[in-house]
Length: 49
Image 1 (spheres, rainbow, N blue to C red):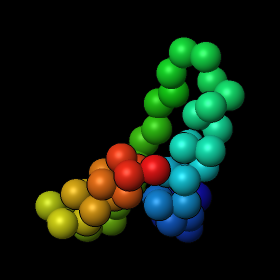
Image 2: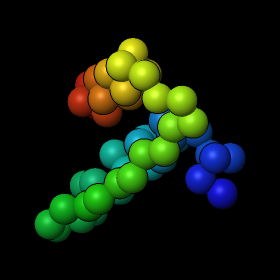
Image 3: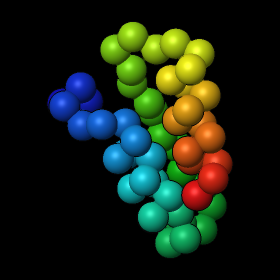
């Protein structure tokens, strides 16, 4: 389920497949207890790649 897979792994998979996609892709991120620090960390991780 969505709670069993780390969301950072899903972001990395989306980044890896991005070069094979012509238009765009959508990705939903699920966090049990999101806070500003966790969201910012994940966004910066995705941006830096």
